[in-house]
Length: 318
Picture 1 (cartoon, rainbow, N blue to C red):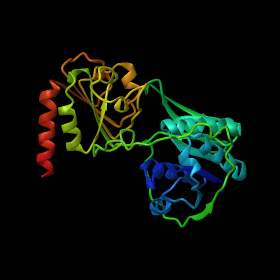
Picture 2: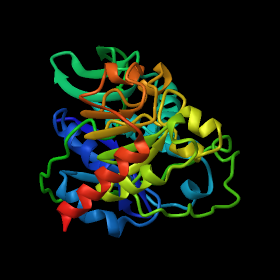
Picture 3: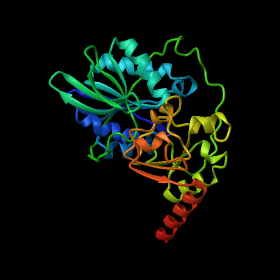
Picture 4: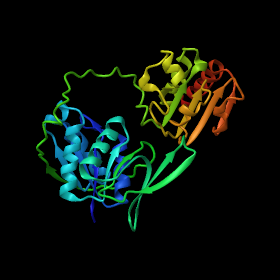
């Protein structure tokens, strides 16, 4: 069976669940080979083996931490040239999409972004995307080179398939062009204790209806163990950080449960959350567009509804 390269999504060896999802998808296409870039492999080793990586390419040189994504794209291009993989799977993050674009150019391959499913076909690899704010599903297939595919978090259920991966250290001569953008400083992001927005199984988002008070939204999110999101209106007003914006110009999410509180449901917002498995909306305006796509709708004041919901959840936990 041909290899399927999976770029490990991790922070200092702490493997994100997107990697497990991609390794699961890779097993449908061939033999999953993880590409681990950076430091901390010892912490990642068990997770990669548990989710079916039959091989691990290790690229641990400092150059990958000292520069932006260009060196990673050159590393993957070298591996594609050596292994001719069935596909290359990359997490559909901002960095992941940039790496995918650079890699596709370097290898003269087709690229598909934000795939929610991948399957093997007689002609190669079929990918599924949710487009136009989730209104349509598109199935496509790359016809040139090794398909470069970014996989949307939470779109594929991770499954364990224990393996004993063969490890191979990889050294690639990185070009001067790829080294031209250097990282001069790093600062740890303040931790809220909540899960990452893009990867969270549950997201509670607030919009214009909060009036700038995200207290009830955060309280419900904490009761559910959820991430907190925000609409563009709330972000533009300075009520919540831009990194929490859900929508076409923000983060695209696809959680098991999405709660929209005080959000009208403009197309820009819907584009970033419409593929959520279950959607609940709380809004005082019964004519709000958000109610057109929800599974459950509550017409009411979020400052009344959300605290009551959080209280009920906490009581049932105890």
